[in-house]
Length: 79
Image (tube, one colour):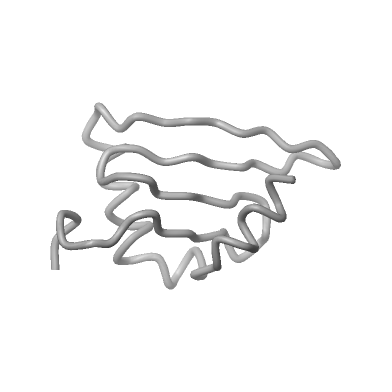
């Protein structure tokens, strides 16, 4: 399976609950980063190879670092 075959968006969070991800397209994602009691939301366009590999890993090879979540859980965290 390839990124072009995925039905986006895809939602993940790190197992430590410090970052939540919405993978919007094969080259674009949003991250909610939890720092103490604050939240920081970043939009990332993958232009460099490491960013592209990171998106691929979040979609396909995430089980060591992250878990799948629902859109509702993501939106709740985004507040």
